[in-house]
Structure formats: structure tokens, C-alpha cells
Image 1 (cartoon, rainbow, N blue to C red):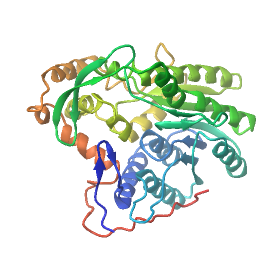
Image 2 (cartoon, one colour):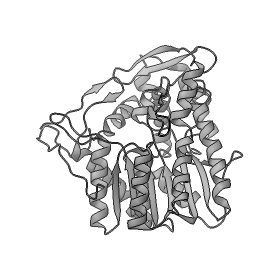
Image 3 (cartoon, one colour):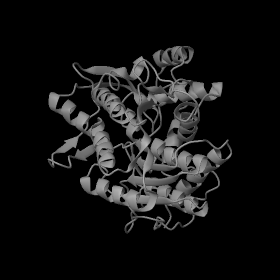
Length: 396
């Protein structure tokens, strides 16, 4: 079929298999063009098919020659519907890993479920023995509790009072003012249940109980803090409360693992164009302003650059991993440079529909958004027929 982008708000409903594959290969090429790292040997990535999770798997495999298991919830093509971008990304990764002679396996299903945890542990025990790095990078708006069956849905809302600020329709470039009602107590509770640390804790508990972790195993989950512009709806809102729970979980897991030489970290990463971040009012406009300045200064990084730096400059170095006063790794250091943030704040105050394309990189934001789904990739003729049905090597 001829596959073109089809979007509905911040959701793209199609994905291009060749475009996704080319971008995965570009990330692999980036890692292979840099020095190999002394890092993990057997890696589990929970939430492995896009963004920072996919980059973590690529850096582990092609930067450290590690064997990997990726757990993710993505859908194959069916009828006139393409597969999800994560499916195509994972298919490309698995093919490249096989060609490189690396052990690599994919498990598709609900990472929150006891069934998928058990299936993953069985695979670890039979194929890899023990895991020395667990990356937790799950991004889901919904969670079914594996023990109680309660269904939780997350919301992106402020706490306490109505929040008003600028936002942008990144498809049209229209800058408007948005007012967001505060979350209820139950919405806050459900958001923490989805995006907090309970499931991460459950994964580590299950792996430890099954003796599937090495004594010195490391685990890391990803977070974002951002500037004051976004704090009301992000850092100080429902998502921030969930991430506070994630940080508490990291501290608990570190205490749990350190007796045998293990470690647990939160890595605070840079603002990123994702389907999730595109749904957060204010954030796409902030990212567009930020990216313009960082690209001009030569400090802009995508997922693969961030995670390669995380591994080589933080996690796997001689000596202790540098952390902030809360014990978090800060790979958002380039974004949060005070001089850069002062420039972003100046741009923010001046932004209107009339000047948004002059003062920000909104076109770049839009390109990156559709690039998540394999569109706009240089060298691909999107007018040609493409085969949407793609198999994943070593799918378990």
C-alpha cells in the first residue's frame, strides 16, 4: 500500500516501515561511529520500542555488545491499518542485532501484567541467565493493576488551581492561551498509579525473587523536570507528583540493591518530541523555542546522543556516578543551562501566531513529530508502495 501520514490531533495513526527502519539504522550508525563502552552484558529494557527506551537498547547492543530483551506493547499491521511505529522500530532493531551476532529477543504485551513479567523472567533464565541492567522506560496513559484488576487512567493537569499560559497547535502554528482545570484527588491518585514507580518496583522484586539479577545489577528509569515555564502543568502538576513517586521508588530500590553492589537511578533527560509530550499543553511551544536555540548553539541532542552520553559519562565510568542533591543523574544539563533558559524565557514572552515561525523551530518540531512515525525521512519516496506487514525476528 501507499503509506502517508494521517494525524488526529497529537496522534499519528499510520507509520512507515522503511522510514522507521532507516531511522533505527541511523541511531545504530551513530553508536558504532563512537568508541565502544565498557558497560552491561545482559540488558532488559521495559518499554523498548521508541524514544529513550529504544535508544537504551541500541546503545547497549551496539555500544557494549550486550545481549538484550525488549518488552513493549505494539501492534502488527492488520488489514488496511499499518503496524505501530514501535513495531517497525523493533523489527529493524532485531534484524540488525541478528546480523551483528547479538542475542536479542522481543516480548510484546502488557508490561504491567504479571503474565508478561513471568514470561520475561523465563526467557532470561533460559537464554541469558541473569540481567545486569534493567532500563524502565514505560510510557502509557493507562494501567490495569495486575493484582486488583483496577483500571487507572492518567491525566495531564495542574494541582490546586486553574493554569493559564500560551500553547501552540503545531500543525497550524496558531498560538493561543490555554486554561487547564486542576486535577481532582482521584485523578491525581490514578496518575501516580500509572506513571509512578509501583510497576518498576514490581519488576525488580520479581527479577530478584527469581534470581534473575546479577549481584551488581543497575536499574535506571527516566524522568523530566524542565524549566519554570512548564512547571505548573508538568513538574508541579499530576505528572510531577507521579515522578516524585518514581524518585522515591528509585531511592527504595537503591537501598534494596546496594547490599550486594547493585544500584538504582533516575536519569533526568532533555525535553523530547514524543507523542506523549505533544499532548501536554505548553510543552510543544517550549520545545520549539528551546530547539531553535540549541541547534544554533550546536548543543541539540536527540535520544541516541543523550543515552550514549548517559552510559559513557554517567553510568559506566570509573568511580561514583555523579548525581544531584536528590540523587538523580542530570543528562538535561545542556537544556537547563541558565543562560540558555534566560534566552528561552525572552522568546516566550514575545511569542505570537504572527512570529512563531521566526522565533522558534516549530517546523523542526513538526518534522520530528512525523519522523517518530517514519515520515519525512530523506531518501524515501513516499509515493511508492510499501509492505506494511513486517515480521519481528526472535519475537517470543
